[in-house]
Length: 112
Length: 115
Image (cartoon, rainbow over all chains, first blue to last red; front, side, top):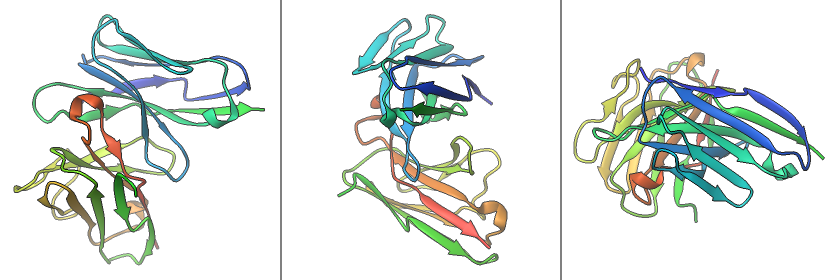
């Protein structure tokens, strides 16, 4: 089945630093999504990307949909303690059931 | 109130019993899904809950173990049957509250521990 390779698996950074994480796949996706999950909560959508090459920002977050449609990255600038959590990429194919395939997640720790 | 509420939020169950998890969305939605998230892991899709017809299960998940109901466009249930400790996980409901193209919204999950 379709799989997403998400890296890094975990990151430990200092407050104020920038963060970058990415996802790659051997399959093409028509939509890329980035979610954040806090402990005890469900994932919350951060950014949705719909077109190859698309670059979208949401505050300090920036994400891009790769030209090949097989990859995406998420950048967080000037990290703050509340950025702590697990970040998941997810790909959606069009047609059929429009299901999501999730990456394994990047656990982010921000040291004050 | 939550846009997608799940009940119970957590439970501790005896092996061999069954637990039914409820998912209520605050608006009518087309797509509803059930996921399992094992400790420290990613989300794995169990099934798509179809309104008015049988759920569509992913490979490795069967109806006898995870029966699903979807009686209307705002509500679904997932039952974890004949539980064993391996079923200890977080179970999450999601729905296309703002249209599938805008990604899916998730409930807060049900943390299940089987002893």
